[in-house]
Amino acid sequence: MVILNHKERYEYLSVGKRTFYLKNMDIKNFISAIAQIAEEKGIPSEKVIDSIETAIAAAYKKDYGEKGQMIKAKLKPETGEVKFWQVKLVVSEDMIYSEEELEKLKEKKPTEEQKTEKEEKIRFNPEKHIMIAEAKKMKKGIKVEEELEIPLKAQKDYGRIAAQTAKQVILQKIREAERETIFDEYKSKEGEIISGIIQRVEGRNIFIDIGKTLGVMPREEQVYGEFYRPSQRLKFYILKVDETPKGPVVFLSRAYPKLISKLFELEVPEISQGQVEIKAIAREPGSRSKVAVESTAEGVDPIGSAVGQRGSRIMAIINELGGEKIDIIEYSDDPEEFIANSLSPAKVLEVKVMPRNKALCLVPEDQLSLAIGKDGQNVRLAAKLTGWKIDVRGSKEGEEKEEKEETKEEKKETKKEKKETKKEKKKHTST
Image: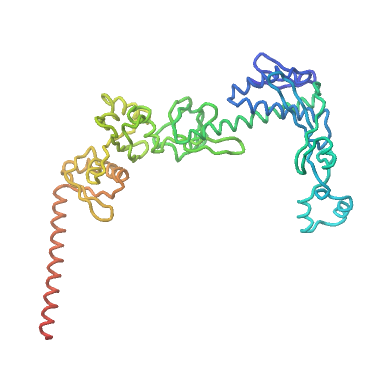
């Protein structure tokens, strides 16, 4: 836990039971305190050192520097030694405004040409810039537009305002580094599942504690019929991670179809090892799902692997999804076989593949309602799973339909024959 406050006009930083005053402070111990903060927040040590160097440079400039100066600090973590430099940009005569040009700029309003010239030229500031002739005296071989580092005398005593500036810089840098670390960590986890605890419900959004940050589950990614209460632990699918001015935002989902495939990977070793492959998923969140599986290894039963002994594996997934029903279907490259399997648990007598990606499925009369499902759910999910437009009919109805189609075709043929005979008669009469 970090506490920053002031006491007797001096800023201090507290880490646990250790307190470090930012006036006459021991830099080496100060580094160890900041490193402890970084370890707690999971920030790389290089970023911690960079934040300390920036803070010390800001404190140095506040007490010992001049306005407009660019101060650079370099810290040796092993010894705690700090070195300071003033950074100046090397310029030539043609890069800066002359006194006459500056006076003209004050008198006249800048035109478009002058604006472009203004962008090319700079106002010389002795604290920021140095002429090339002077720069070469200090460092041979230096070129125009390069930076010259001039060593400064190291200081150890810093006033209250300088210490406060250092404190603010350190806090800002650590906050930025923490946000960047969180973003990188969760960005790499996109498309995976994560366990989280529901913290609060605000309007239509639900906020979930997922470790280092809070995830957000919008209304459209929630499952209809599921009730979410604080302190409830659930598994979520990481949809995407966005960078915002307030920090990274992790969007979570319970309705996304790939949540099921990831849960199967967790529960079924054959799927995670690649012996069984999930080929397709059709889902109506909170109600029912169909999963098509295929074995890639000999002697491995894909459906048995997914279900588990006495249904142990599938039941664990169903419980995680709040009782959502799951049908495991064997995938086949043959469309007729795959469509017949997709209508499970109903038994299909015959599948007829028709033009325009349509299929006619004939089922026993007593299985018709089972094949269609409640409100057409079973056939709807089968169509989503296979990508075919499925028409389910009873065996008698199907036979009648076939007979009607056959009679239609016969009538068409007879009509054609009659037309042909009429044409032949006309030819004979004309001759």
